[in-house]
Length: 258
Image 1 (cartoon, helix red, strand yellow):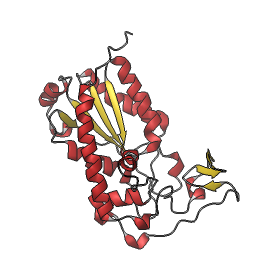
Image 2 (cartoon, one colour):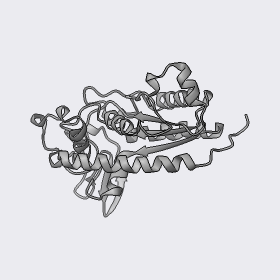
Image 3 (tube, rainbow, N blue to C red):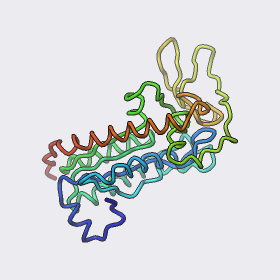
Image 4 (cartoon, rainbow, N blue to C red):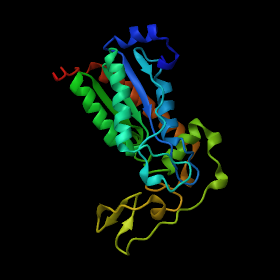
């Protein structure tokens, strides 16, 4: 079921059922390395949501396409709505459905920068008597198969896009990363992460100064294949379907009196 396709009478009936699960894809519009499309972070969660849409008691909500992305704004096309705006947006969205009876919300998140805002909104709903669960698909994938290494705008995300929107991947733009140096002993390993004597430290820089393409942290984008993407999307989808059954079994909180 899709919320956007319902009239308000249909929505009224569905939202009143405490066993209904609202599935909300959330992402960002931002750079994704040398070939990843700007919509990568919301297109992938949206595809996962589509695969869940036929499950009983699942309602897929319209996708949130913008997020918290200040570290990517040096790359054209990126939109950053800021942490504070994202917190307000997510709280408003979730509490609107809560006020009409919905109690279970499953957020399919495609962008790590959204995490603090999603956590904040989820806690707000919890204190009212609802339950929010957040799935960051890119962290689930390598736990299901260590070969599906995660990063940003890297082979993992490119492989996923090859599987669901192959026409959006344009090989002519494929290029190697040029890594911005820190010191001989402090080696960048991700967007703002570096390794020093076996441990990780964060060094905050504009992503464009860290890596030329903006894609970094996992395997090179050149290693992505459609087969990898298809197998990964299918496996994570199956895992999500199994998890939804468990999410519905979780006891709802009492809610705190105001």
